[in-house]
Amino acid sequence: MKKLLLLSLSFFAFSASANIIYDKTGVEDKDFIYDEHQCTEMSQQVQKNTDSRGVVSSAAKGAAVGAAGTAIAGGSGSSGAKTGAGVGVAVGLLGGSRDRRANAANYEAEKETVVRNCMANRGYTILN
View: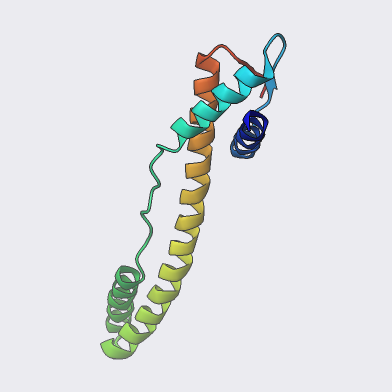
């Protein structure tokens, strides 16, 4: 039972911080796995950033800019607003998707930083 627990802990610890390379000279594997597991658990406290551009607000801004641009050019504001809203929706969708990907990458990087700092504070030498 202990071996199964140790094996499962090592799998989760390895998968959570596979990008960090440690110098394990003079370190017992069971101690390392235990410490890395605890640090990985602490990294779960990192908060996800869910801010992203809203489709509705981008559409509203696009409609306003489109209407204003068309009115300045002397055309009908409603056709410019429709075009602007269409462009605003497209920009909102693309921008929101980009924001979500960036937030996910920042979240993973911050979790890795927490593990890295935690292990360094426990006396482990980090090589990368």
